[in-house]
Image (cartoon, rainbow, N blue to C red; front, top):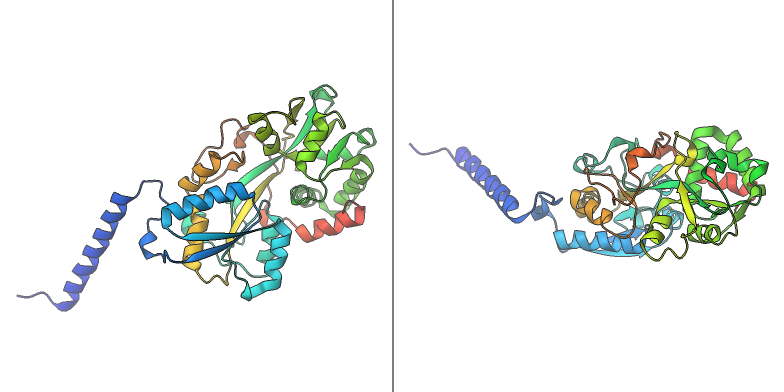
Length: 351
């Protein structure tokens, strides 16, 4: 008795599936994010609109290309610069993937319906607090808000217990912020989400009176180190990077993590999403999956970026204060309102 044709075909499919599985296990490590790489078009070239630090993203791009063979071309810019460009370009954008330093710019692009849903395999890599409720993009790295202070000018018991305290008269002229940067605007978005519009407006008015304005977090830290101001609001990694290198701009300083779910303990999420208009959607989804995979997260943790790894159970650089000890406020990263923050900061005269 001969087999019927359907059974022959079924047997062939099972055999091929087994063979493909065997080849995958033999050729890849258990950290590979590209078990289905055979299905990818390795001749595709992705266009990445990159608002993250260029050196960190180049490390991750190199790892992805090594693993998949897929090339990635980066167009570098700032969070809202590239987000606004994507909104203007719409479906005609050449971009396949967008990555940022902070989440408000991702929310802007998401609000215009320009992202495709993130693959489930990628979302499975990332804890829910780092994924927006829309699931149209995902976090892949994080950075913590800190107060950097000059050890010769302040003791720990003289520090603010909340970032809201910095609008009080006793802090006039004593601290600095980089008001024009996406980092500080993300911090303001956390204040807005936690305290509401009226309290945020009052706080920003106080900051306008009290704060010295600098061009970037590095400039704030340098001014604190030099004793020009007593304290400043920055992201953690500026200090850790300088400490790991020459300490030229941080030797006289320490960090304070406000904690207690204060808006000043905000942990900002760096986001990644695939454009709905991507010409290579499968390969673009694989790139975002790589960013959140063990391989991608280990590359991030082992880099000099000093940002927090957040996915696939990969521990951050051991020099950092552990992420689970920061006690940040619980926020839906999809609800951080970048345009509203800019409006309020302009109204207060900070922009």
